[in-house]
Image 1 (cartoon, rainbow, N blue to C red):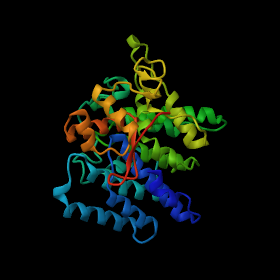
Image 2: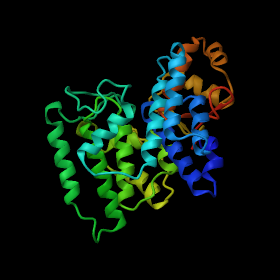
Image 3: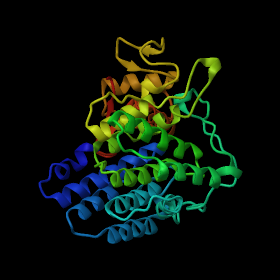
Image 4: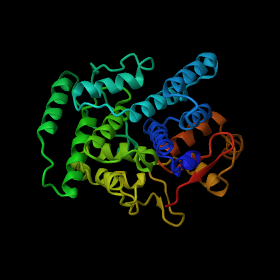
Amino acid sequence: MNDIFEEYLREKEPQKKEKGYVWHTAIGLQAVDGLKTSEYLIKTAKRNIDGDITFEEANHLIHSYYKENSVQTGADRTEEADKVSVRIAQLLSEKSFVFSPAQYISIHAQLFNGIYKHAGKIREYNISKNEWVLNGDTVMYGGAFDLKATLDYDFSAEKEFSYKNLSMEEIIKHLAVFVSRLWQIHIFSEGNTRATAVFFIKYLRTLGFDVTNDIFAENAWYFRNALVRANYTNLKKGVHETTEFLERFLKNLLLGENNPLRNRDLHISGSIASPKCNERDEICTLDCTLDELAVLNLLKADGKRTQKKIAECIKKSERTVKTITSSLEKKGLIERINGKRFGYWKVHTD
């Protein structure tokens, strides 16, 4: 994605550069739910950055596009990714913000209105989510009957907290705890991480930080996995909740440090020490199926292989290959570069 907006991120004109980062972040955040935006969204974003259209016009164009092409929308949720990206970009471009539960809930409503029936509504049932980083286990999320009270308490505690005389290390630690607890309450049924990220970015700005940059855009999946690890304990397996990974992310985001942000390092099985990690090829294959390993090896040899060619090689259907590549993307092992039609798969070997 960096290549898509590179010309704008290097812009000398402040307004274009700022819009470039806003769109870069908005589109990158879709990765927390494994979503991809369309080429039409990218073209629309560039028109907005160039000043040809406003955010309102960009939003209208995306809605019209899917209204006219409703038959082409499918289970990949591209329509959701496109519409939410426009809304995130617009929200991050606005300077208005109030630190309150109402603002947090309002952000969710603005992002998902017309997409989820529960947009801007606090969930009324308990949830669990299977997490790759936890080997399929789930974080213990807030109970449905206590959500509003818990949310109000956390906001009240943060409002009363003083950052005065704290070292930057202490500030980072506190911010990591705050955002991880806010996320863990999980007051929304869906779209919780994206709403939390947008709220957190806007809050950080009020604290004087410039946070619309490559770190959030290119490491959104790591951010979510770090939130998971900050809220998970399993004493039987010797796993304790830790904000260590979230702090690494925030140090890169807020201080410009260059800590490695690798999803495989967050897996509760460990990374380099795991026998499932192929050290010779430097590709971590934690929790990979045999089919996933086969696809990884094929893409490592030739990242331009089509789904049809891969399907022929592993003797599976193209639909199965699509599912496998989607899974590998979520695990941070592969990344699509330069779009669906003319791009290629990059296998992460660092």
